[in-house]
Length: 180
Image (tube, rainbow, N blue to C red; front, side, top):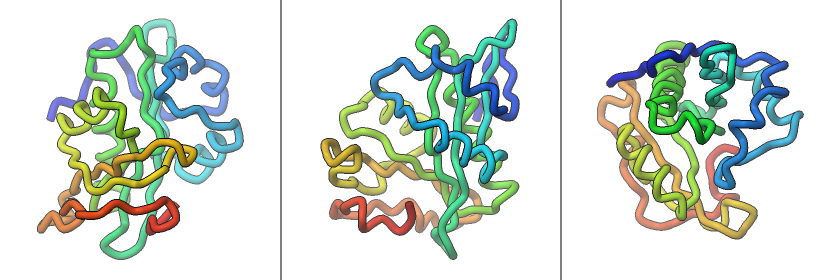
């Protein structure tokens, strides 16, 4: 897969980036978290937290995630990936996702990567499908009990038989998720 966007550098996220990414978090479909949430991810999962930076140090996008689960459920999770509107359709989301998948495979030797996306966000769903993700299951009322989510997954090389991406037939509730 092509995993590089022109004129962009990827670097580890730093605490002071929290004061520079407002231009990225303007989309209504982008989940915005409290400061403590961002900082806890940075402290616990720094290898999963990256910034796409353009000329002059401008923040173009970022990704944050973590490794979680046990046994064959050991996986990388994308908690947030977003690109500023003026930098979309340049391959930045693919670059950020490839970086997270590489961390998941090489540093954590996990079985799959997963993410949650609003069922109404058809553009994002199509994008993730283009990256090789499948809809694994529907999570009822995941977003503030108001909107369902799709749990989308992509198998990593450790899952040779692709067991982690066999779709479930019935939806689940948030409290039925294996991890949180």
